[in-house]
Length: 258
Image (cartoon, rainbow, N blue to C red; front, side, top):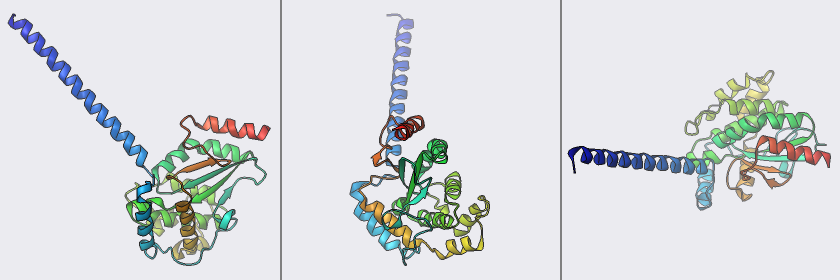
């Protein structure tokens, strides 16, 4: 065999080996992304007991103790739902969420325009339930304090707008930026008419801390796998891999025609 042929075969083998290595690296990255996406904001069954114990131990630190004072207009069992939309709407979207949860932010970014369109048209009513899953998973109090601030915004009749501002300014999951009450009050300035003495007192005093704890307890005992959990008329649509904003709109429109 000539030296030229041997060099050619060696080069081909080297190219094949390099290609296989690139493929293995791509597969590892793809698996890492899939695993990472699947565990974001998910409450593993095996860790429920530990998280409940951790939350219980941190309840005093986050200011969660005290009476469960529901925000104005809260509805449902134990007044744990914050409603947005008309009572006469034929479809109800139930959303369990955590303001520190990146997956919740992703859901909001994708579905908010459609949800707003349907609620403004009187075709959809949304009931928001607030959880503090990330506080339990990574430590901190930002989920709890943001939920209290959102309840304070509900008292002022500005929950939806402040809800959107929180997601638009969500800090990194590991930073716990919402634990800073001054930051929450600063963000309230982005909602016209919300940053008032009454709102500031509500945030600083943790007026709805006990209610937030009760809401999170309901989440923990509800058998949900993580946040967001999104139910349309009782059916979990977040786990439907074919679901899109267009499909959600189609389902709501069909319910209103029936």
